[in-house]
Length: 180
Image 1 (tube, helix red, strand yellow):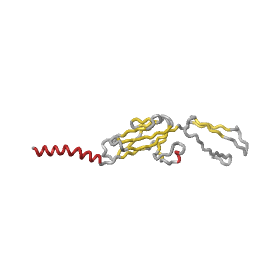
Image 2 (cartoon, rainbow, N blue to C red; image 1 turned 60 degrees about the vertical axis):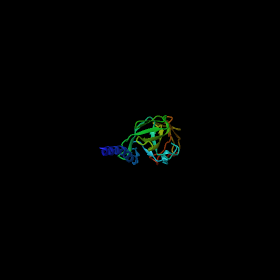
Image 3 (cartoon, helix red, strand yellow; image 1 turned 90 degrees about the horizontal axis):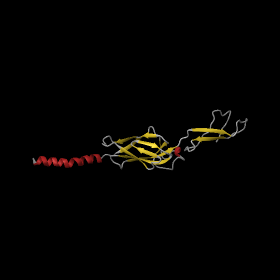
Image 4 (cartoon, rainbow, N blue to C red; image 1 turned 90 degrees about the vertical axis):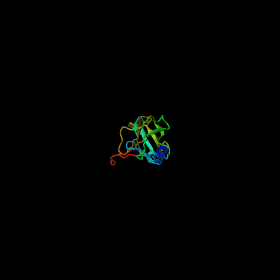
């Protein structure tokens, strides 16, 4: 009987240690599925003028839009596949559950952390933009004589649009030409 009790006591003492060792031996990784939200590399030319230089990948979100993030926690053997979201500027983006909501134009850093091991994180810079909803063009003259020029001025709605740029082009180079 003493041998059986000694064996059971040894198993009780050794088993939790083995389980912790097995879990501790795994390397947890996080992966964000960005199929619905484009991710730009830190040096992408599209980001020029939108954000300061960063080493983090950048998510660009329009204001007042929400996205549910799908985070994959690996390996499959990880027991707790939950994760947490946090941002360093909640006036720009609200993070709740698995959803990020763009509140106002600006920037913040999003941190995704493993619930099982909070030291395992994934970070992105989120840039919230105010998109242009309408462009109107006014001309300096109502008509243009052959060989004449006219200046075109764009107006953007809303006034606080993040990027106010237009590219001028024509499909009929033989009739009219256009430049900046």
